[in-house]
Each structure stands twice: as C-alpha cells, then as structure tokens.
Amino acid sequence: GESVGLHLPTLSVQEGDNSIINCAYSNSASDYFIWYKQESGKGPQFIIDIRSNMDKRQGQRVTVLLNKTVKHLSLQIAATQPGDSAVYFCAENYGGATNKLIFGTGTLLAVQP
Amino acid sequence: DVKVTQSSRYLVKRTGEKVFLECVQDMDHENMFWYRQDPGLGLRLIYFSYDVKMKEKGDIPEGYSVSREKKERFSLILESASTNQTSMYLCASRSGQYYEQYFGPGTRLTVT
Image 1 (cartoon, one colour):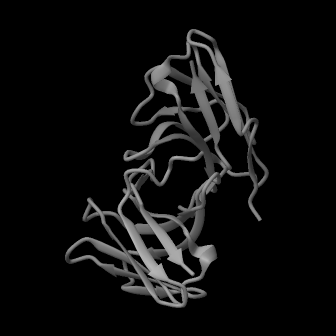
Image 2: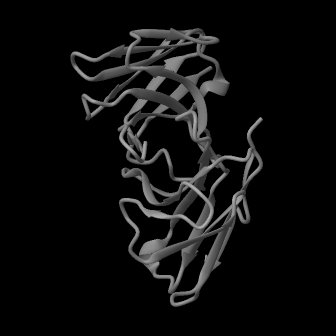
C-alpha cells in the first residue's frame, strides 16, 4: 500500500467538526504559500493559496491564515467530511529567479465517522 | 483542468537497469519538475526545467538525469537504478506566470 502517511503527525477529528492543520515555514522572505491535499495513491492536489501581503484567504469550506510574525500558516477546514481524509502539506515559494516551492512534510488528517 | 500524466503508476526494476519515467502535461506550461517523495522526508526536488532543452539541478540530482525535448514532455532517467532509488516519483508543471504547481498521479518505483 501507499506509505505517504507513515511517520507523519496525525490529526484525528469527528465528521462534522472543524479541522485546523498547522505549518511552520522557514524563510521570512517567502512571498507565496500553498496548501496541498494528497489522498492515498494520488498526487498532491492544490487546495488554496495565499500571498504574503494577505493575512487570510477563504475558499469553499477552507480558510488559510498567515502569520508572518511567527512564520506560521494554518489551514482550517469547516464541517470536515470523510472525503477530507488525506495528507495535507504546505509549500512556500522562496522567490528569486527559480521560484522553487519548498514543501513541508505534511499532516495526516483522519476523519472519524 | 490541468492534466499531468505519468507513464506508469507502478514499476519494478532490477539494480543496474536504466529506467525512464515519462511525464506529459497538456496546459502548455513552461516549467516542469521531478520530485521524489519518501516517508518522513516530504517532497524533494530532483530536477526542473523552465524551457525546452533547459534543465536545472534540484536538491538531490545525484543518480538522475532528465530530458526535455518537447515543451509538454519531461523525462526522468535513472542511468543505473539502485535500491536507494526506490521511492514515489512525482512530476509537476506550472505556468511561467503563476506559482502553483500541478502534479501527476505519481510513479511508485521499486528497485530490487
């Protein structure tokens, strides 16, 4: 089976509850951040992004919060559903000429029915 | 929708074999990337390309090479596969204008 979820911190929530997944990023000069969702056996899927000139951005059932003071990013999922079970990881854009994304190791979200 | 496809979902090769992993994207993206994903280590960049015939080393290029002869296709080559290259390999692409990368489904490579 797939092993993406091994060795990862796990957040276990009840269906219908709100989930908050946290990420600490490393570079204070990073100008753009993305949250990805990776289901078992699949490639990462874009969820939501935020630029460094914003503190908050909302999508459908998801909200991303950016705290540049402490270099912290969070993803809030409202009314968590079983289909939200996956590994979630953040990525920061280092900027510069290459514009490479640096990825966090991820958090496994387990939704209990 | 952006579509990134990879030639194989699962691959089993023997030590010393030459391995080709193919990636194709259909959105005319300039930039393409190869990552490997290992438990506890996250995604690590192997190589990327910002244009046809252009390539740049990522963080872990040793033991790999790449080829980009056409804009839509980016190939990862393991010249002589070793057991420590057993991993999930992910291809991604993005436009030159935006930062978000779009990923393929991945190829799980096992080298025995």
